[in-house]
Length: 188
Image (cartoon, rainbow, N blue to C red; front, side, top):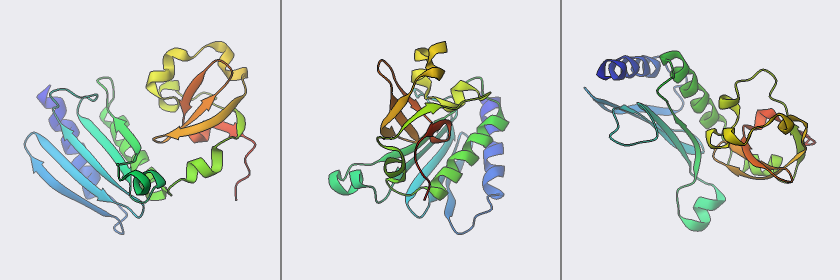
C-alpha cells in the first residue's frame, strides 16, 4: 500500500515540476516522506492538491479541492464555496489520476464565478453522453439512479453543485458535467 502512495506521490510531483502555466501560483507547501501538498492560486479560485495515506477519507491517496474567491455565496455568507473536487479511488491508475488533476487545474484556470449558473439555470435539454464512461460524466452518488429511459428524457437545469449541473426531470434529479448536457442555450 505504501508503494502505491510513493508511486503516485512521485508522479504528482513530476506533474508539478512540469506545470506549464507560470502565471498561476502553484507551489509545494509540504513535501515529506508520506505527504505532498501543493497549493494553487488562480484568478478566481484557490485549490489544494494533497497526496497522502489518509486515515479516514473519501479518497485513496489523492485529494483535490477548489474554492471560489469571489462567488456570491462567499460574499454573502463568508462561507467557503467549493466549486470543484476530485478524489481518487482504489481502482484508478496513476495516468487516470494525472488526467483528473489536469482536468481540475484547467477547470480552475477557466473558472468564472457564477458562470455555470448564468449559462445553464432554467435551460432545458437532454443528455449527450455518447460513449463516455458514466462515472466520468455523472456524479458518483447519482450513478445508481441511471436507467435506460434516462437518455430519452428532457431535463431542466435547476442548479449547480461543484463542477456539476443539477438537472431534473419529472421523477429524477442528477448531477452531470456541463459538456454532456445539450440544451437550448446560446453561447455568447
